[in-house]
Length: 393
Ligand SMILES: Nc1ncnc2c1ncn2[C@@H]1O[C@H](COP(=O)(O)OP(=O)(O)O)[C@@H](O)[C@H]1O
Ligand code: SF4
Ligand SMILES: [Mg+2]
Image 1 (cartoon, rainbow, N blue to C red):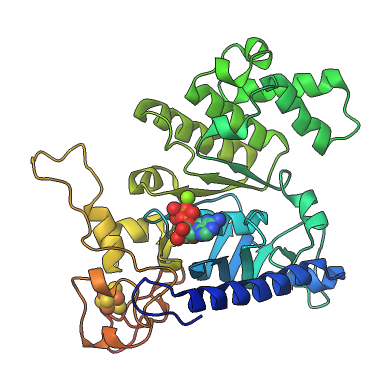
Image 2 (cartoon, rainbow, N blue to C red):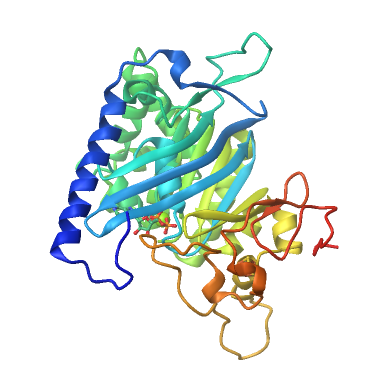
């Protein structure tokens, strides 16, 4: 919706926005109530080795100030048994992307308005042409999503205290996971499984912790319990949204090591969200760099760390603190601010902060350029690999 350029909204404009929002929210909510056939939310996987394929995902919030384009045409894949790191400054749409995958975007204000989130489920098999089918989570009915959420796809949040219920013991909450996933499991078996999970996440007195309440545990222990819960149902994908941000540095390293170790052992994928490039460097196989609701660069960890191309990715790397650095110079920070997500500019969103900006950048938002089969960047400095002005050569 068009708005004045200054940040002031008149009563007339405000009424217009509210009217528009109600209409939009009603429309998207009515779509969710439609009775759908499985084929309406089934799609062909582009590569059967991916567990998730996100294509042109758009998620927005209809707020009183206007429509916030939180996720604005995001595309990336999460291959099976790999860790994909999603990195970017606060507010760039990382959490909203993950909430869209879980169908947990705050409705009715928040809505997935476009795109596909294909989940490679074993239930669906292949189509007549032998192509692997997947569920399109963006269109999937909520009742169907219950079967996937918490079982095939689980989530570890930043602050474990807000995700654990303070009035129930750890054991009670862990057993619940078994009861939900294996309805006929006996109480004894559920307890044995819970204690086994606590053991797996490196808790030294699991029987004791089983009987404890969340407030009796340290932050690191609580995060271990959250990991145990996330792993209890043998998920295919774990979304870890800033899983160690609330912990101190040594505990952070232990938790990350544990996550990586369990991921290898259990053979699942992890979408690891963080604003910390150092964490990504330690953990990820693939990296997705987000800026203002868009993916501006993606590639293998080696491509992003050794051949970063987008000026924003290069800036992020420069702003990463190094223990080995001997200078006393202040840490580099990228000057300027992220554009207002309600009033996004027509050209490159990084333009007002970019030190490489040139005449071409006045054009519309740059298209995604393929550098290698895995490395993509959205910036006018580059051309498709093999193109005339190939800046990567
Ligand atoms: N419930 C909400 N209502 C309105 N705007 C929201 C809501 N949740 C997130 N946003 C907006 O969406 C954008 C992306 O947020 P988020 O995905 O949480 O960022 P981050 O990359 O830090 O995880 C931000 O501009 C934020 O203000
Ligand atoms: S398109 Fe231009 S302004 Fe945008 S990041 Fe590239 S060089 Fe900078
Ligand atoms: Mg977040």
